[in-house]
Length: 81
Image (cartoon, rainbow, N blue to C red; front, side, top):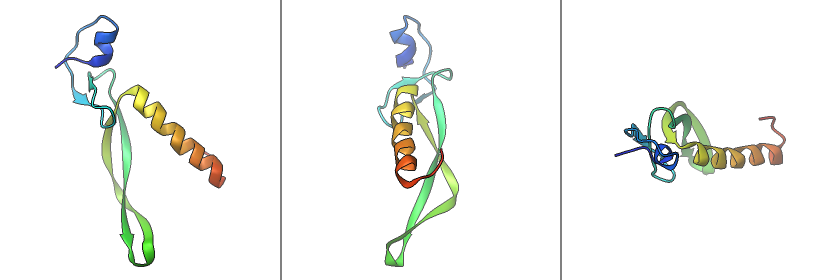
């Protein structure tokens, strides 16, 4: 399998993983690794963020799209991002 972003640029590189959001194959240069908070719901519908985070692999396009949601949420609740 080859990196989708490299193919778009006319290059051929082996893929190292897949984007979690769009499933595009990505090489080591184009893959982005982010921390994904793991949550649990306790009685009375209280959501708690657990201390260990999962790994999430994304392409740069999906990473930017998902970060805009986080930034917008932070602005709405008055948190600096």
